[in-house]
Structure formats: structure tokens, C-alpha cells
Image (cartoon, rainbow, N blue to C red):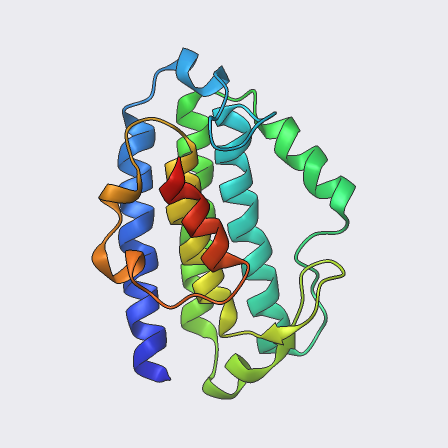
Length: 181
């Protein structure tokens, strides 16, 4: 499992780099436009969500490391409020947020001792899962939401490792939905 985690971490880093490169090509008007893959959200909403999701996943890793329940999000409504509050920022602010939250997530991955990867964590009221599942969730989040931006990155651009990876539900269906668009 250690090699799987190292491989997933490398994939997360590469997916983050691709997303950050895409964000640097966006103009101010682009981030206020709708995110085609996420009806009701602008690209600014979606990028803020990606950053807050990194924070949420980092919180779960802190929980696994310390044993102190650290919720991913305070509540569903708090999650939504944070996303919409951050959506109106400039491209440079969104870029910094996505970059900084990804770096903080990555740093927490590096802090986790081996035994902590098996600690059960959960997001909101959903069923719990071992902390090592956070890595796969983060990778899927990055690849699918990069696609959802509708700015030229799509399923044909996914690395073969991700495109053919065995994913549990609902992540498998979410990836297949993106392929059909």
C-alpha cells in the first residue's frame, strides 16, 4: 500500500500542476463565466471548491494523524457559503488559493505516520473510510473538476493511469459521466 500512496501522491502533484497551468491561462472574465460541468457554478465557484476541498481533505488527514476529530467541513451550508464567498476573487487570488491549499494538503500527506492511514474519517454525514482513501478522492476531484471548467482540458487529456484506474462508486460513475459530455 505504501507504493500505491506514493504513486497516488505523484499523480496528485501532476494533476495539480496541470490545473495550475490552466488557471494561469484564464483571464478575469473567464472566472465569472459558468463552469459547464457544474451547473449553477461559475468557474470561480469551481476553483474555490477545489481549494476548499483540499482544505477539507487536509482536515481529515489531521484527524487521522492526531486522533482529534477534525471535520472536513463545519456543515453543508458552511461549505456552500465558503465556495460562493470565494468565487468573486481575481484569477491571481484563485490561483494562489488553489496552489496554497494544495501545498498545505501535500505537506499534511507527508506528516502522516504509517498507522494513521488506516484511521477511519468521514465527510459530513457520509459513511467513514480509511484515511488512505483521501488520496484517491483528491486525485479524482482534481481531474474531474479540471474537466468541468470547460477550458480545453477533457477526458482525452487524462493520463492513462487515471483514465483506466479502477475506481469505487460513485467516483467511477462520475468519471464516466465526464467521458459522455
